[in-house]
Length: 103
Figure 1 (cartoon, rainbow, N blue to C red):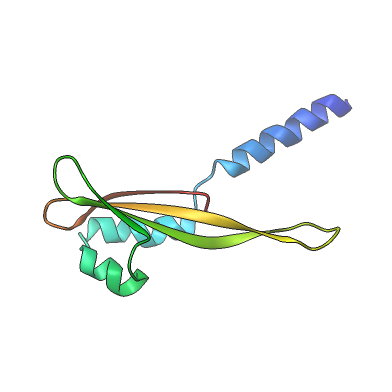
Figure 2: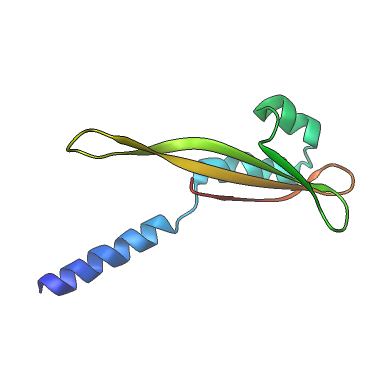
């Protein structure tokens, strides 16, 4: 019984960890649909942490942000979650796709 309960808790933790970030999705999806350009992101988010050219033209920008975290109970150490956001721009400098991890 205990082993079954432990497996169930592990499965639930894995499923919860694989979920997306609805707040980030809500902000990036309209930006992609509306074709926001690089200047808009630089104005709203600041300069990116890194830039790289794309093979068929355009550019890829990477942002790193602190997105919450966890504190451990014995000494109340805070471990921040580092969120990596990658924005891909096409030749016309418009947002064509995005991805994020660690958020």
